[in-house]
Length: 75
Picture 1 (spheres, one colour):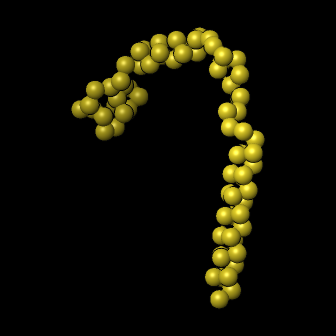
Picture 2 (cartoon, one colour):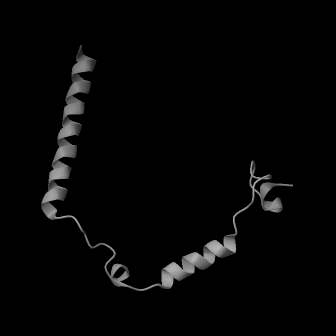
């Protein structure tokens, strides 16, 4: 029999299988739950300056790593 036939995945035969109906019920309750967050899922909580600063730091680190890589390859 394959894993699909038994309902157990390989290596979990001795462990308790999670109750999928409970997980489904929890997801449905979460999905139907309303609120301010559900209406504005992409509302940024960080100020734009902080996001720009973080992006600049990431870009600077990438540039430094590229320069180090070029220096190592040319040595």
